[in-house]
Image (cartoon, rainbow, N blue to C red; front, side, top):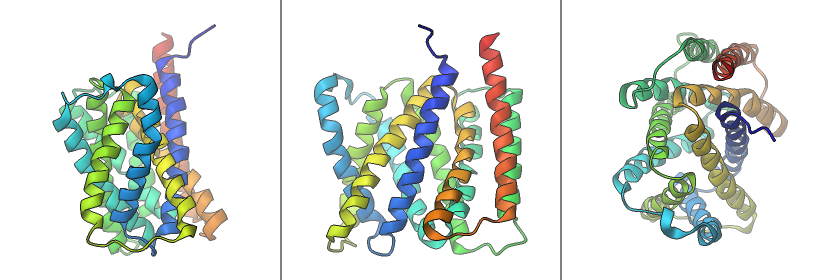
Length: 288
């Protein structure tokens, strides 16, 4: 039996992460207006702990260590902040626009990975970053559309998400994916409990399916992303997040009748071509 290469495994895990993130986006949109971001994140993380406990019972608690507690803390402060901004952005902008602006996060993440993790850029990765950035410019069109509050929030969110990816990559060199995700839900349950105590609203039964879906996809998204980052460099993995745009654009059209914009589709095509070039370069390098 032929085992898959690390690059192939990384791509497969990243596809799982992208699908989970898309479903999570819909869950947030359905809860927006009824529940504050702090409350959503608290409930999601609390449910996440319950889901992960059986896996830890089977896999052993020995992998949950306090050796890198400061690293986990930094990652989760950064990530929690980014998630709050992301939820606010979903309530203010069309889903495709939210995803388009999120796509600046791999650019930040790649820069931070080079500066702090010592990763190297190659021709395929430069191509992905260059075309990814060009695609985002085509979609956002700075100077041609109004720079609203929602756009500024999502640009800030993108920086925090990029930094989260780098912190995650650093932890994957020292911790298992399960340990990283478990520490995430524990720490963010604490963060969410404190923050949501100031904005708590009564829960309704119709919110339960969306909260459960939010919790499950939150776990699968971050577990898959962590496994992808463990299998390949962040400078290769993070540009693949650009593929989230066509997925979310289709979801926005089917569920919320958000129209496809020609410039969004053009930008998505440019982004996809960059990802394809990067994947081809990485695969050929591995084969050689």
